[in-house]
Image (cartoon, rainbow, N blue to C red; front, side, top):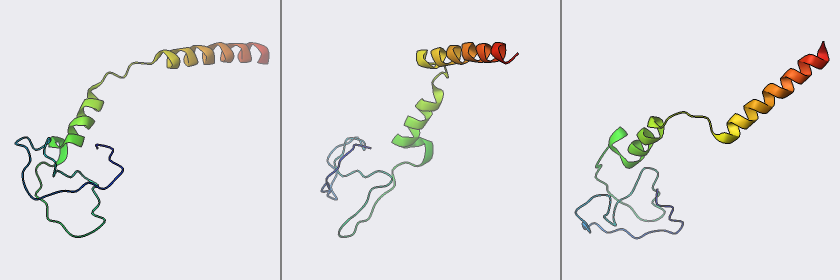
Amino acid sequence: LTGESLPQKRKNTCTHDDPLETKNLCFFGTQIPEGSCKAVIVETGDCTVMGRIAQLAMATANDQTPINKEIHHFIVIISAIAIFLGL
């Protein structure tokens, strides 16, 4: 989620009151390349950070982009020309 490419050290102490700001938080898909760990699940499903991002993505309007409108207009014109020349 944060895009860290290098391993990040984590400790078993709370570094911030807000769980999303603490330095020892790991997200779904976090890999443990060395050693072992124990974790406490804070949220699941739609209550997670990824779940909230997914809800926001689903809530946006499904409007056509300007390029999508131009492509549709182009296809209509080409189709009309093809039908006209095919007759």
